[in-house]
Length: 345
Image (cartoon, rainbow, N blue to C red; front, side, top):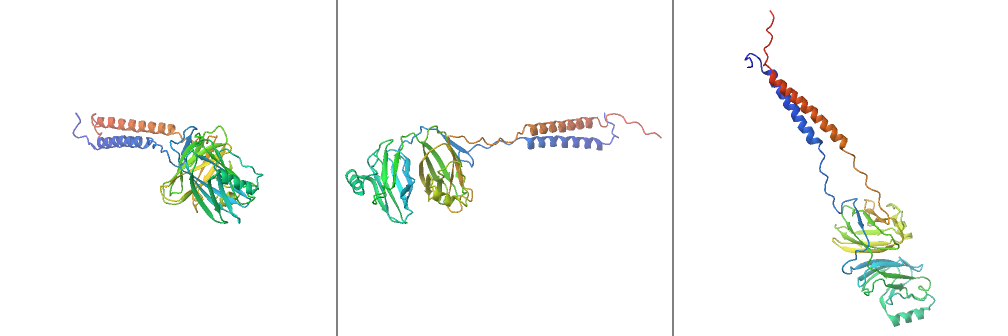
């Protein structure tokens, strides 16, 4: 039995110290545990979306194209691709020159017009065989038309300008209907000036590769999805305008209203990394750009720093704290249990 004359101050101090060391060990253990990783989101910033060939849409999706008519004379671009058989097609035309031009689309599938024909012979061909679309655009003006494509997979339809001698000088192009093997990708735009995802991957092995990107405006601002035609070229907000004047984009989808959905349809000539940007004022400078990897894989993301060493140190520290607390608790039980040496006189 503990002598009643022994003060209990030391015992209380040891017990409080033991409790303090134990609480410290628990707190250190809780703080040192790694947090659970958040679930990955399919459209988070930086996520890559990769699709293989062979996933055609169940029903034809409306297709939108943008085409410049120039005084070269030429259509830019001279090739339109990606539309499914039977799809409704809308073509936006912009006459960048000082002469009239027409966009006249032959309805004769896989028929190449003879460039040596006179303007009269060319006119008689269209009078006899008809056209899928025919519109004249004045200098500096724009126009648009919507028409259905024939339900013929893999067909090619030639378009020309019927203004005398423009076709003969090279103003011609082709609208190529998809065979159903094109890659379908999905993209979103936001008011935070971001594309989601900002990395698209197409595992193409044969070229040219037909690619269709479905774009949805998740915000309220107007955006564009404008794709560089050259691989390995990365733009700046100071030079992109002059660059696209010299190198018309492969795709230039213009998403003007909230929740609008449209397709950018284009053909990639060769493997490489192609940059796409938003050309709306200030958006590219604000960080609205992304990359399309075709036939190549983007480098893997850097792995997060390992926490194994940190966790080991934390566990070792917790063990030391618990040991000290245990020793103090044991020591407190012996305080006053041994008779003290009588004081000397």
